[in-house]
Length: 508
Image (cartoon, rainbow, N blue to C red; front, side, top):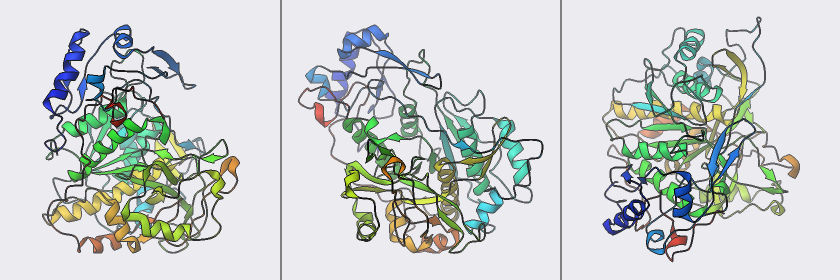
């Protein structure tokens, strides 16, 4: 994969020479130098990029330094560059909601909550646990979301009696794995280890929101480290709850992110993303797509709520939850693997009016779903009643980690890019046919129906059915994806196709 995506030597030299002319010392952040990083003072960056940086403060108190007015590069450098970061992109903020506060009378038995035992029952994992020594799974954490060993072990002691949760202490990777345990980060690691017993877990945490951090684009730091980690060491599945409106990344930058996602898939790595917690995401009377789940090269996970028979599997076990985001991308065309499934949905009556501005020819999401409410989290202290697709993504990732393990036990490859497999084996998922997403001020959201829908995707994973489907797959390595033809893939000091004529990258 590194050889397939390596930039031309003259493009590397154009970028590194430009940086050295301004007193910076460039450094390759990936094995093939498709990402170049350098540290310079803000005033130097402003001269290099012909821009002005401002400090932006979120209501949470987090501060970032960005160039909201855009930037420009010399034509010879722009021809070699996808995009420069940090510049116009402002990180999104997603937090799971907490419905209740723990009190002295909190029921710690987990009754009524989506505990590890209830999730394993609901998704028919039976007594499946990890046996393949090389199998690994991971969650990512950004935006000052720390890890707490004590919180995780307390969660295991409360809810994992008689079963294995995880496989020892998770390995910590990244520059921000300490500090106070965050609700989001602990939800992710507690959930994935609760579903996938005896599978080695890793916690990849990244900083980047403080004004004194020189590489304050944490999402990109994760992708560069992923690219730089060898096949023998990298986890084969990642769950990420990071998300924001699709248009918050420029089209050129989003194209480059797609390349990174494809690189991971070609290496046998599955990437699952929480679809979002805004329902149809109505803004200005229009439905706004959300990313990175809207990328056709990742698996977007929507949300469900308990039904009347929960947690016993069956037709009435789950229903769509209103917060579950879904819809259609404004950037990416609909991939072939989902066209038939989505066509059937769009042919039905009762869908939101096309006046809401959604693009029916765009990549449709979510792909699948899982429980997204009534989770019990320990993040320094008990937090019962946590909700959001941040619950759903690590739940689904845990199920697929067990499927990876099943294949690896037989000497087979990991599953890698999941979406073609998912749509080919739609019957192996629990179809959700009741409920709908919230439409907010736009009124009607997306209804759940038979087959794929824009709130629960193809449904929730059924481990037993999916395990049978795995028998039909080849044993060899995951086939490489068809990567786009790119002249260079350096994003820090690089613009995309919009800049091959020397134009400055524009935010969309």
